[in-house]
Image 1 (cartoon, one colour):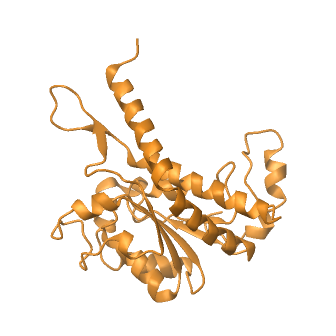
Image 2 (tube, one colour):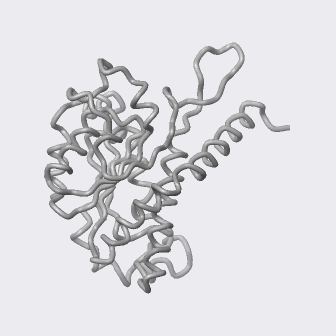
Length: 252
């Protein structure tokens, strides 16, 4: 017999992904068109998750089996949990820090940046969006509109400007994560457990990549796609394209 808690979590995940599938298709298609046009010119697409677990989103579509080789994850040590969880949270709340990261990765006019942050309010997230706008970088935001709108303007995690990510990007993929992220209720416990944001981010991002690839193929373009190095022929398949991206993708 399956655990009632496990079953509750499974159902919550399925329901949420179905909601995203029903309501975010138009936004995913719009964002995919942006990416496809960018990749047609052999340009790199940057993905940045400025915040602890938001970094998982950028890693999800970087160097990933079945994923586009044109994606470069911005993996800055400042907000990675491997540097310390409390340190990560302090850094993501530091105004101006993301400006340094954008400089380090050399983002410039004409580039395309995916900004992934489910809450869409912290300083690193907002600064990355503001910097992108100032530099002429097009942006796709993966974030929860409802979470941002429900967060008070005086909340300690907010950027000094009190702005929200979904108001600053060119296209929004709304993860629709509720305040607090966790979704499972346990009898006798006041606080919910088991977060949802990683599932929502992964679904939207992989859907975006898949739609982009389909658009390119329909236009007669076979984009370079990563094959798992753990699959037979994977290393050989990937080796055909490594030199095309070596030096252009910082963390490759």
